[in-house]
Picture (cartoon, rainbow, N blue to C red):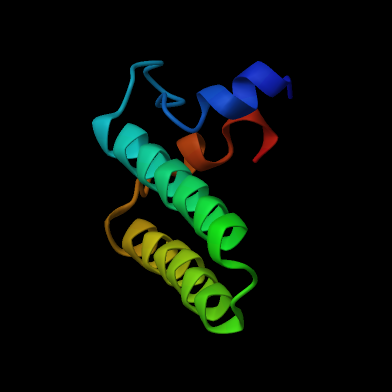
Length: 85
């Protein structure tokens, strides 16, 4: 898989090739949160508690995303095996 395909998968739907607003919003939110987190750590120094909060937010969002995908995700078996996945 090419690098452009990997980054494209963050925003574009695999089946239609169209941009998905919810994917774009999630990626933008993660990017902004990460940039702020790095900036804050540079300005104020290393803070263990802040690292735990950040890691919990990232992990919690990923778990929620997986559960939502399991409950309301595409149940079509042919689309889940597309591109060898």
